[in-house]
Image (cartoon, rainbow, N blue to C red):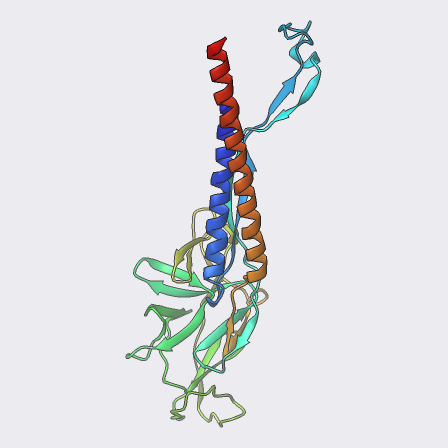
Length: 282
């Protein structure tokens, strides 16, 4: 019976971890580029039960214990094996802001932080006072030649992530400038976004601020080749790939599973107490 208490407790702890992940998904449903987390549960090793005798007396069978009839399996609990991040594409929403970008396909934009290079799908940027393209928290967005320096509203980015600007254009509005709307007489290439991917994306680690970092298991970030490079959409943002209805349904399932394990522990406790009290009386 004591084993039953630990089994029920492990189930409650596993459901607590599930609830943490689901709640975090709901909290970030409006965060651009967010990827939902899914806890993966696994059971502890199961015990195989065999019938040794029919009269309650232990009798070792002739030859091997494998000859004893199988009664069934006894579970010993569960645990969280890993928290899996779902990297499926989120829907694109149009903003018409020239500093907003969305990646259509697999890959990450690279950002320089004090801790080293980090990777993001939340591509809502701005220009700092020195004219560099930075994230909302101030980190430099990297091109293949280093930090990207621009002039306000005189640049355009094509689908390959190549950045062009016209030094003669001095527009000061905040709308998205396109080649059809203006004559770019002195078009010049500034840089190209440093877009990377990984051999084992599932092992990337979230580090906050919509950033991921590479790990030993994910491998280093490798600049994507032309055939696998995602399309860059200027004036768009990628929404989180979280379905609020699905997350709420799973939260309800978690609460029911937690309550079932709780009632199981209460039943085990009552039976154990009854056994001890009656055994003492005898």
